[in-house]
Amino acid sequence: MEFKQLEAFVNVIRYKSFSKAAEATYLTQPTISTHISALERELGVRLIDRRGKESRPTKHGRAFYNYAVNIINTRERAVMAMKELDTDISGVIDIRTSSIPGLFIVPELLAEFHDKYPNVTFNVEQSDSEKVWNDILDNLGDLGFTGAYENNGLKCELLVRDKLVLIAPKNEKYEKIKALTDKIRVSDIAGEKFVWREEGSATRKTFERWFGSEVNQAPETVAIVNSIEAVKACVACGLGISVLSLSAARNELENPSCGILVFEFEDDIPEREFYLVYNKNTTLSPAASKFREFVENKYIDL
Image (cartoon, rainbow, N blue to C red):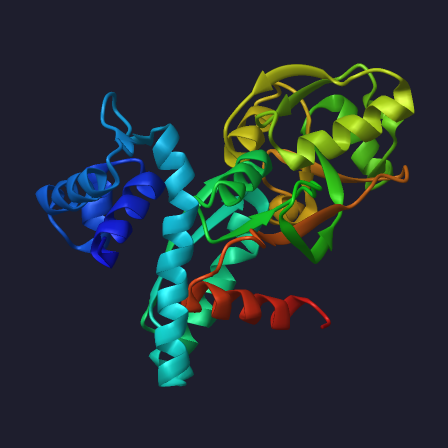
């Protein structure tokens, strides 16, 4: 069993494709296939299901994956320990992030870290909070940034808090409220239709729990879209109202000429919290470990 075979296997699982794994590691697809075939022959089991559009692990592949990740990362940490030079840190860090931190937290972190460690590159996948948690649990990413806390075995560190705000179209009702105040009450929006992102969105979950406890009913959904910009576009067109983190609505708040009105809540609504998460049962690579330390030092009072 060779490290290059383990690396090929891990990358195919992470990228869900032989061709994408080859592209990410600057190898040819036949080379990746050869490495995995050799590994499967040695182990005597099929590790990857090659049928369909995506390459997925078999039952044996899922069981072997965590061992492979730990072996690779432990080797890298051992090499770095011998060098004892921070400036030599290199490699790819796989990051999973939900929408808000992916737009307003992660990019600045990547830029600052890359200035310090220019030989490190990043693979960033943005989804919703639920998928971030699942990917980090399954070791499909090194570190996650998410807007939800779940007590499911991951190490979870609070980074920042943010207010929730209402965004509404510039119609007669909301322009009349805006003329009087920048705040809105839950009674003002009872019965309104909401535009949401997918069910895994932590913003949506936070607000729905709070709204249900205040008015004893779930908010009525008129549309579910897959991005914050799509939510804003639907609201601007008058399809409904929505709730976003203040960070995501700051441009609209500072630009009154846009087609959206932004309100803070007069009621005592919970704040959004954003977390760094990682699998405490998995050995991080030297690059991922250094990036985790960098994020902790920037945001967390250790």
